[in-house]
Structures are given as C-alpha cells and as structure tokens.
Image: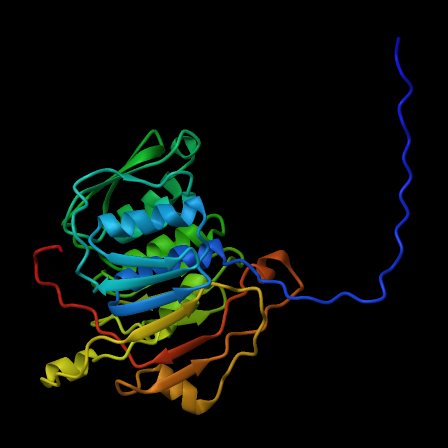
Length: 325
C-alpha cells in the first residue's frame, strides 16, 4: 500500500536588513602559481589567503620535495624560502599530483627546464586526463617530455637546452599557456604564445610583477627570459642582479606578501611613477599595484580577478651553477 506524498509549503519574506562579514576563500589557480613562483624566487615569500585544498597541497608537497623549504603557520598562510631560478633539486622520487591537473601541467613546464629527470603521476582520474597539449609545445622548445598514450605518467628528461618559440594554441588554455611561459623563463630567446580566445591571465600578471619582461598585445604574450628573477610581486627586499654584479652585498632576504584571495575587485594603478618602478626600481623601493577591475561581460573575464599586491624591492635569480640544484 502506497502512502500519498506529503506536500509542504514554504513562504519567504524579505528581511529588513542583512549584515555581516564574508571571508572569500583563496583562489586555487593563484595559489598554485604563488607557490611555484615563490619557490624559484630568491628570498622569503609570505602568501596569505592560500587555498589549502588537496590540489594546492599537492603543489606544496611537490615544491618541498624539490628542495624548497615551506612553512605553514596556518592553513591559509604559507612562508616560502625560495631557492632561485636554478635552485630546484632532484626529488629522487615520483611526484604525485593527486587530482590536480593544473599542478601537473604547470610542473611539466617548470621541470622541463631543470637539469634532473622527473616523473609526474596522479590519482586514477588524473591518470586518464590528456597531457599531450602541454607536452607538444614543450617538445618544440627542445624539452624531453613523454606521456603514455597521451596521458600520465609524464616523464621529463633533464639537462635539455630550451629555445624560444612562437606557439599558436589550437584551444585557449591558461594551463598550457602557463606551462609554456614557465619553461620560457629558461629558454635561450623570447617565447611567444598566441591564444585563439581569452583565458585566465594570472601567470602573465604575476610574472610581469616579478620583473619579468613580458609583452602583452591582445591575445599574444611574449616572454623574454630574464637574466635575473626579480620577484617584486612578492615584495622581498634584496639585491638585484645589477647590485650583485657591482659587488653590492645588500640584504638578500626580506619578507614578502602575496594574497591568494581574489574575491575583491580593485582599480588598476597606471601612474607613470609606478610603471617606472615596476620596470626595475632600486632594491628596497616600495611599489604598490592595486590590482585591476574585472569585466563582468564574460565568464572568461570574471575568471581573471586577482588581488592587489604590495611590493618591496626585488629578488634576483641565481645564476646557473651547472649543478642543476
């Protein structure tokens, strides 16, 4: 015998007022990139608003395995002791990305330029996901990147000299673009990535604020490999490459802050004074970039939101010592 379904009625009435505070969680895409860029900077970087999700923690664990000392005073607060552009060390084990496709693709680009071999794996789901769209442009740059039928494991051979290329992406992808730009930091000449449509530009904004020479012309991004990695975005006081060449032994360590929280919208500061400083002010200079206002016209533009950042000086990348660490 079947019973008749019970019908319940609800009435909603407008409230007189709503008040309170809402904390916007950190952004996954920005958190991944903040860990990687902080790790290859030289100095101490502090990331607040970090998203302590399983995906981002996979990146954190991998960076530690590559020789980067990372403290985590709280789930949303990490302190990264950067090792410089050429300071990553052989993990001597397979790096497990869990379910983080972003981490696997970005690490493929970053590790393709190192002097040691690497292998990337993931969980059962990630092991079925396509990786050739990242591997293909990296091979064009001279990297040794091998997939298994187009999917993980991803095997990366070390010690390859990378060359700059012009790559037209068949499909707009922030992950592919970011992987190529990370590898381009180590190339022998400029690399240009041309996208068919707009995608998230966190990497471009963060690299440019690190002092990397990056030209953006519509859907075309050209990165000129730096002689030094000045991580201005991370606000570290330190010495630039020019200082070290002159023998200036200024403090090479400082405290950097980068906010991975991106829920707020900010105006984009375009003053000539700040543009001059962003191009490479003296060590110890103070630069404030107030972020930018994201357009609400399209979903892609909404995905480009990022926080304002305070910069204090610059960091240099270590010169290639030839030992691959």
